[in-house]
Image (cartoon, rainbow, N blue to C red; front, side):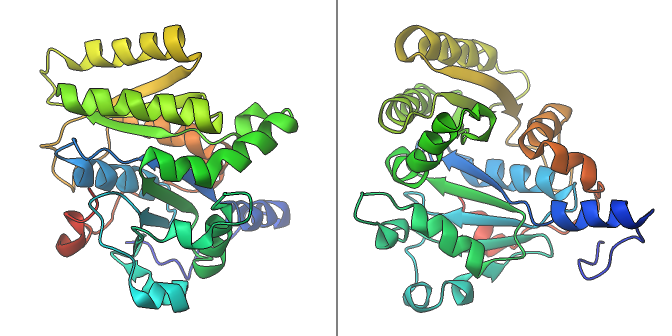
Length: 272
């Protein structure tokens, strides 16, 4: 198991500096909550595990419909409300919390800055929230990326769905809201379905077609996750690919570690 207080000796001074500055980059992933998904907590856990394989510390900010409401202490000291679930994963119950940071323009982007100050150790921040909340959090980042001509810097929402119609309808509605209200036009999908599901690929293709035909949006990638997969099993190659592309150059800088403890059981069900 990896000790975050120690790290391998750098090969040379430049290599050490690259690792130092790479560790200060934070990857923020907007994860669109879906109350119609039966195994959302498991899907988040698998996502955390895939990032953890790169030796990165993950903060899960759970502002979803099913999350616990933010505690009173979160309003006084945000850092004090962040709970460690393992050596590589921390958790913040944040339902109703982002709107407390709304500014005069209606943006809640100041909440993201507050998270950075409260959790300086976090290298990956998963913000699990309804589409409307994510619009307020990330619309400004999308606008700045467009203004700077840096499309790669624009946030890419990660949709959650399973192979039941209600969850797929909700995922499409969320994609429509994020595209039209926040200008977030590139999306990815985690689809919870058994390996032999006859509907999984068809669902992903239908979402991609509807995004292109009706929204002018793009479903860039999708990954099928088996809800029955045990937490200790390695991430699938498809999920590893999605995570590597999210991390970009940081994936090459961070060593890969696969030995990790599971999340605490009492929070496993809460991430849903």
